[in-house]
Image (cartoon, rainbow, N blue to C red; front, side):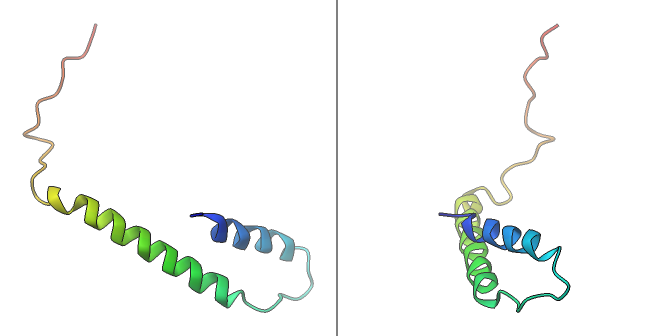
Amino acid sequence: MYGELGNKLVQHAKRTQSLAHLPPYQTEIVRALTREVRDLDKDVAALLEPFQGSFNPLQTPRPPVPC
């Protein structure tokens, strides 16, 4: 599930705060998390592609504000 790897890194960082020396870098988790972020970015880009350049907030009428 998305977010689990990031949570794992945060928990690891919290545990290492009280140590005198830093443990080895969590290379595999960071790489997996980077791949996850790239996958999510591709998904968002694919979803937003049909709307590129077609939305201008200045030309969109605003609904009336209730009093």
